[in-house]
Length: 419
Ligand SMILES: [Zn+2]
Ligand SMILES: [Zn+2]
Image (cartoon, rainbow, N blue to C red):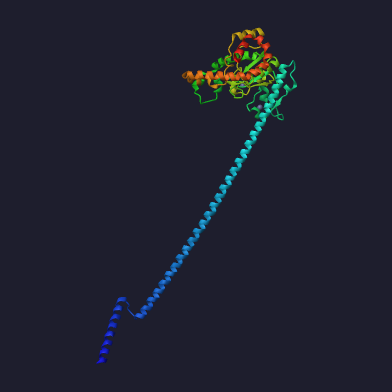
């Protein structure tokens, strides 16, 4: 009985196993072979898949590594480039700094040079004035030789033809040719002394042309006439004036230039001593001695016939026709001084605002109170100015007494200016 039970147990187990195997076979779709075979195949497949994955990983890794290296390389290149740019920038900055330093040094040297020149000029002028004083106060008929020393701007170069003929050159002493200045001479040149709206604004387009139309030549001439009779007595205080020429050129270096020729050298020196750096018509006078070979050479030959092709931009003198002929005798001069007795411009202060330019007229009429203030201010300036001149005037007083006696009226005017 026991054996039978065991047998049945075995059979049942075998049947369950068969059913399980069958079911497993059905579940895994294994058409052939047995499970061991299939298991082996599965393992091989798994192994293959793992290999594939590893291979793919390796490729990906390589790709990543390559990309990493490339980006590293790019970064390094960028760094190098930035480094170069920085260096270049620093070099540029250093260069600029160096240039700036050089410029600064150059300016410093220029300033020093300018100061030296100014000092030299000041000393020369001082010496010159001292010599003038000696000449004026002494009984010497002939001027001391120190006063006759010429000053040459470029002694080694050929003389400038314009300066030689007119005592003026558009380039000033920067001119490449030589400018020869006399020590003293009978002719005085007051540069830019005659200021006139019609001359000064001739080259500016910014001014309304209507304004210019109002200032035609006849107006300019009328003002010149006033100017002529205003300055002539003042210059005649120092002696007989044989020639007075006023330029109407538009060129800046000739504009309003006024030449005064005395019969006597000592008179020219007295006039220079008394009038140089004085104020007239709101401007400080700049007088210089000059030597002209002849008036004929200085004045443009084509001007009087109005045939000069350069017009008033000519480099030779174009001058106003004087309203009277000079070289009169003493009685005639004295008569003339009685006739024209105006000297308002001589007492005018350096205040430019009260000039007679039409541009200012409207403003001035609008605000008369301000104008009064300006006049008061002007008088104050005048006092200051006259104070400076007084000491100088006292020195040359002695020399003027003779002249004053001759021109009684004008000396009274001068006193009014001084008080
Ligand atoms: Zn020149
Ligand atoms: Zn000309």
